[in-house]
Image (cartoon, rainbow, N blue to C red; front, side):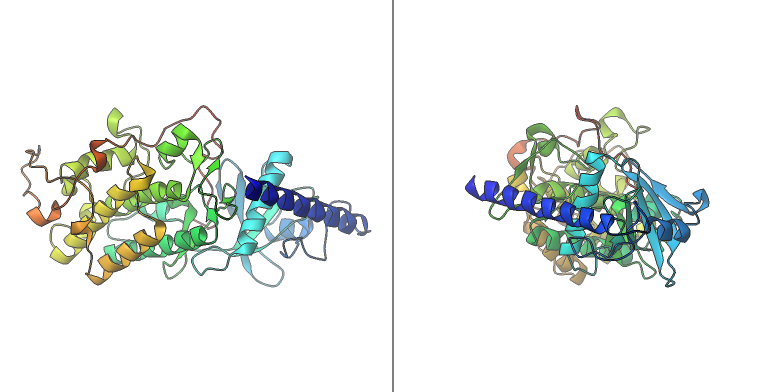
Length: 400
C-alpha cells in the first residue's frame, strides 16, 4: 500500500510540474495563446503547433480521414519536412480527454520497440485542440486484411499471419516487462507496414503498473469481444487481461472472422465462444479459414492447430491458467520452427463426438493432451458493460 501511495504521489507531483511548464511556455509565447511553436513537452516529446498540423492535413480534410472511434478521428498528413504522419484529433478538450492524451504521450515516450508505433510529437496540452502525431503506417490494420476493406482470398498467407502473431506477442511481452498493460489489444490496433511488419498502436487506455503490484482495480474499459471476462467481473486489471485479448486476436488470424458478429448464432456472437466450442470438439476445420491450406498442407495444418490450442489456453476463464505473454511468444516461435510442445500443454480432452459434417476427422495427435482446464467452461467476453465503453472501434493510424 505504501508503494502505491508513493507512486501516486510522485506521479501527481510530476504531472503538476508538467502543467506548470506548459503554463510558463504558453504565456511566454507572444505569437499565439493556443499554439506553442518551440520547446518540448515535459515527457520529452517535440511539440507541434496547431497551425502546422492543420496545414499538414489540409485543414483536416475529410478526404484524408483514416478512421474514427471513441476517442477521436485520425487523419493522414504530410509535415513541412516531408514526413508522412497520422494525426489523431481528440473529440473534446475536457479533463478526461486531457488525461487520455497525457497518458498516451507518457506511455509512448517511455518505450522503444520496433513493433510499437512511433510517436513523433503532439500539440501543447493547452492548444485549442489535442492532437497526437504518429508515424504513418501504410498497409492499414490486421482487421482490414482479415475481414475488412483489404480482405481478399489468399492476400494474407499463413506465414505472414504467424509472423504477425509473433511480432504482436513480442511487443506485448515488452510492454508487460516494462510494467505496462495495453488494455485494448485488438486487430484494429495492430498496424502493418509496407513489409507487413507489425506496429502495435493506441495506448490511450494503457495502464502503467507500480513496481511489485499484481493488479489494478479499475472499471472495465476496452472493446467488446476482446475484454477479459474476469476483468469485467472482478474489476481487476492484470497482464493476463491482455493475454485474453491476444487469444481472440489469434483466433481471428486463423479464422479470418471478426471478434463480434451479431449475424452469428446467439451463443457464438463472440468469436471467443465460437472458437472454444469448435476447439473442444476438435472441429478445427469448422473454425479455420479455408484459404490457409489447412487441409492440403500437413505442416501448415499442424502449425495452425497448435496456434488454436495456444489461443484456447489464452482464453481460459481462470487468469492463473493463462500463459504469460513471454510464454506465448516462446510457444509461437517454437510453432514457427516446427518444435512446438503444445501436445503436452494443458488444453482440451480428446473428444470423439460425431460432427455434423462428413469431413475427415482430425488426426488423434491434433487432440492429444487437450483437457478443459478445471472443467469450467470459459465465459465469452462481454458484449456490453454497465460502464460506458471508452471505445467501440478505435481508429487506425493508417490509410485505406
